[in-house]
Amino acid sequence: MPDGPDLDASELFSLTADLGNVPSNIGPKLRSAIGRTSQLTMESWREKASGSETLPHLPRSITYEIKTFQAFGVSVLESEIGPELGGQGSLGHFSEYGSPTSAPRGYGQAALQENEEDFVRGVSQAAEDAIREQTIRGGFR
Image (cartoon, rainbow, N blue to C red; front, side, top):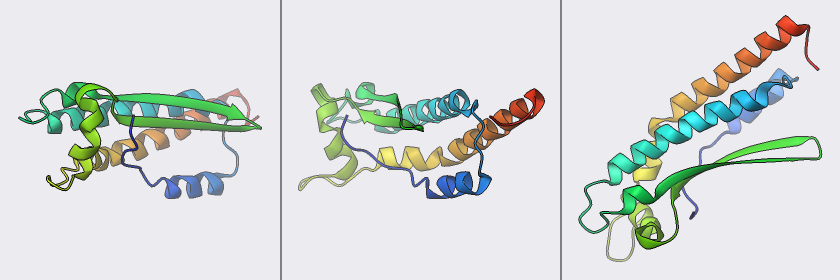
């Protein structure tokens, strides 16, 4: 997938640093929260891109993928949302950012902004749930 809009998560990283200890059981909960927001963002982007006369198949090419990486005591969750390369998906960059002959549409950025509150809410809920479970089990590990 081509590079797409990014969400500035610096406030979340700052919050994480302020919290100090992160519950060991938070990973699956965060993945679920990120998956939900990714799905909503993808659907919103597809809806905005539908009805185009020049790229009628572009909406079907918009997908998301969640990647997980763990090494050296660090876990990374990443969601990539955007058109898959191939067919009209390869032209998604021009739809989003424009070209010399067409104005940018910005549908992906708009979809991401529409779902930003859901993302923050989901991450907060994931943290609360993980902390509650750890507290019930007798503390953080």
